[in-house]
Image (cartoon, rainbow, N blue to C red; front, side, top):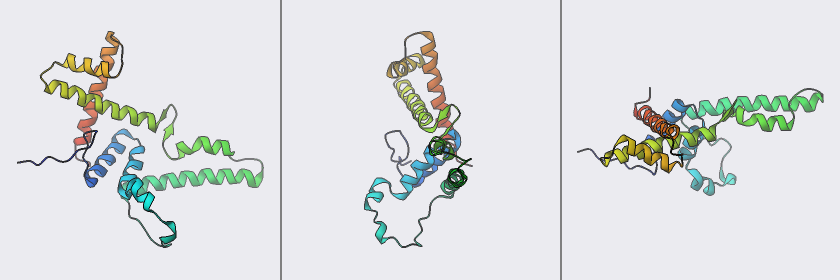
Length: 190
């Protein structure tokens, strides 16, 4: 008999190793690095660990292992931020060229791979979670023996979409996107 795994509010595993694997798949599939930050928070103990942290009791050489896929992302961020820093300092040294503090502030989210032309990681993550939620809601309605149209209508109302044909199609697209994403997330990671 299969034992059910504990799941959280979004229907995802609560076991740390499984959750880290899911966050890696999510980061790779959606190309959203907020999942890396979520993984680091989970892996390092979250708010509870931070609140218990006492920097006066940490030795200089003390290391904390992190997943390699998180470390690769952090190294990329560090190199990008170092480049921003160098360009900012260059402005102060030469008093001519380089990045202003305002420029650095605007470029930092891009250096951390959390924004780009016409997108930001926070908006994308909300969209990702909403599409998963819409698919799961529709699936639950269907499991109650109701039609696909009724499932779509439930999602449309939940999202506060209008009642026109375009809104029905938008709700159906949201459900399909969530189903496709969940299928990708449940496949084993290469």
